[in-house]
Length: 256
Length: 201
Image (cartoon, rainbow over all chains, first blue to last red; front, side, top):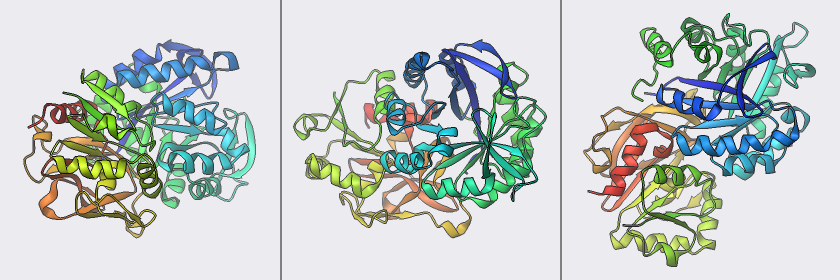
């Protein structure tokens, strides 16, 4: 039986896990390697690390973290943030990451997806997409970049389809409207994208309680859901979330 | 007891290396048939595209080596692309593979409304008892990342799973075992399975 994935998201800044609200006002919440081990033991199906380090000189810290995480956990994980070239992709994969997530840089230079997919396989190229509700766009959602600060002219659905054609193997779809506010995922956005592409779609932004995940799996047709605040602050354990989903009839991995 | 990991530049071997280290295995990673031939068992991993994988294998002389090694009777474990390459033919790039085990590799049917690649955890149903599954419960979940799947004779299938269709995800014939999923990424069940391979029957 194919299972829905719960992916724990860790934002990393200058070597520390941090959590922001609507991309602003970040606070440090722990050591990423220790947190990765903890979530591995507690039943996360996958992890995502976003490097939100501002300064170029501190970027090397992320490579050390990725290497340590890969040594400690037997679990797939993705690394995103600041990946602009195929060399950046190679560097992260070589120390043990399974996938890279490319967001703003893919908008600025879509050929990175194509080149990355042909060099490393489409399974490791994840399109990260930040979207904002906008009635002026055909799908009702506009792609935004640079951590949600810069609107683009791209329609979210068109961009998702284009990225699939270019060779992306998966899409992590983040709603700027719901990110960090724990009021539920953008179910409508997730449904529009997931129903219209042939690659897996991971819902992100807004998960605050287990009901939000069942909503985005059932109504949003998500293949996986990202969680952050709701587990980082101890509101829910992954086990509690999964047991709730199981009760709702959603297949999840409970045998970790 | 030394385990060799076949390095033919198809994807990343870091997670296999980390898994073997965590299991305290004695192993080498090499692209050199001369070094690999003395290993007691072999792991043949890989992620990527079938035709370029075959080209790389032939470049290093590993294609002929693997066929000969398989005949010696030493244990050989294929993982993911390695599994597909062990079979006769792949739809991916219409590729003639090593033909160590009779079987073909096919693309999941896009018309079935499936997301392709299959990315994620799927439960594996044991079809036959096998030492690789020792102390791992039937229907345990393992991590998959693939667009193509093995299609082999029933007699070689030891494990199956469902993704639109039921397909073979674990193969065994004599000394050869092959898995479509990634045990090195499948938590404690995956590590247990690799350990079962290292310990042998």
